[in-house]
Length: 241
Length: 319
Image (tube, rainbow over all chains, first blue to last red):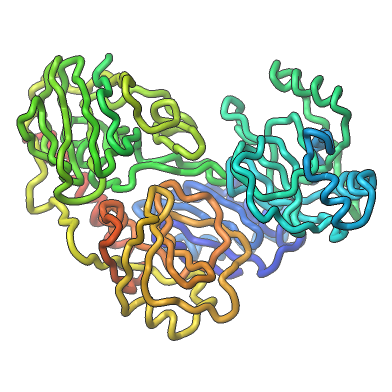
């Protein structure tokens, strides 16, 4: 564990130096400990791939006081049991108007569209962190067979819910933004909804799985989302996935 | 109560408070005033809580029609404010009357003026804050900069005697100076290991100019190139207001109020909290130098500034 300041109101606890599920597990454990302990003066916890960043009020606790407390907390880490990770199923309509680059991705790798869908939807992806834009998940675990370069010129608008590939990453646009990812499908679920508590659908440490759906199913779910009577389909993670 | 009608919006006028706290883990941008000192002083002068929302007015001010009596203060940049054509002082609580016009003219100093209103600005908080995040269309007045025809409401003011605060001012002893080359104090890290010795030397010894690409999200600087040992990319990590990223071109970017929650470039250091308000008042073409400071000293300065605010608040109440 390595603690360093990020300016005078935040510090970062580094728990590793690479993107890996083991380090993500350590980060989740530390966050659980921090949320139980509620250190006076700590205002925000922001998890990332290798770190937890704490935003705090130096009027209430100094850098050195906080660092000392954190080293003490670290001793409890071993005994922490994390709640089992969940898999959130993301209904996704691949291709057509929902995924304009699906054919490009298939052609790029010399495989069929069906194979792209199968490779993309059979994996459970670990949500490493949320960032970049509200509710956007940084995912790990995409098959290297699907790695495809970004568009040369980003699109001015990519709709919220678009599922895309950029290099070795896959992700879901949580709000409408400009973007250069290859779009292969779209989900009717809202990853960011300011009227909900919490406003975001996904949480770091859980997994997602893309479930292929037809355009008709897309419309039906989209309607349910609008009416706010959608229940998420979740399952628990099997070992080894 | 309806208070201001926008006749002309100015260049970029938004509602800002001290920003959204507690939602960065969801990727929700903090936003907030670029110069929190001026906003807080303005609020204290008109009897508000220091974190109440005001209007952040950038370079070219708006023309505003006052539709009800009230008390306001204008702090920060001097954009030559006048009421019905008569110049009015800044850093001072003033009375305004129904039917008057508040206009702005030539920019004399600074980049951003803060208009605070006794009673605050009555807009619905989004995730605990009234700040506008324009790129996300969130918060403030309909999630966007003010436009012609907008009607802003004020909240109920807190004082029994309306006249009590009128004329209260910040002593010139405390008013900041915005012109010339400014020195910003920086806590090094967390990625100093990504830079060559020479880059670290250059960073703390040469002058950097603020480029034209300087907005609420960040300031791109131009100056001596900072070389990375291997590459500029880091594994995406949290960032903060004042953090200084250096992408592959070797030119630093200081992250400001509308920064995203995470970033992927090496961070050479972070500007300390008490120097950020000054930074928010600099304009393209101005220069800055960076001076190393310890975390202990930076936090001591921060606590001193917070104590000053407390004292100023008491003093303003009791005059």
